[in-house]
Image (cartoon, rainbow, N blue to C red; front, side):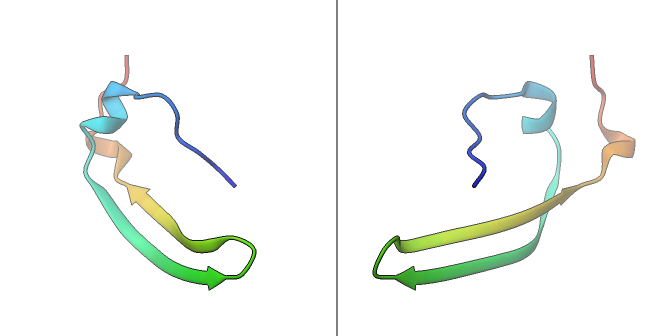
Length: 47
């Protein structure tokens, strides 16, 4: 499980594409959503 806990400004400004979005319901975890993302890094300026 991965949690994003900090804001990274260069990544916040990037254009993200959702490649996979999965909703799951289970007795142990309730309702969860899993997201896989892609970003085009050619246009992204990192410091």
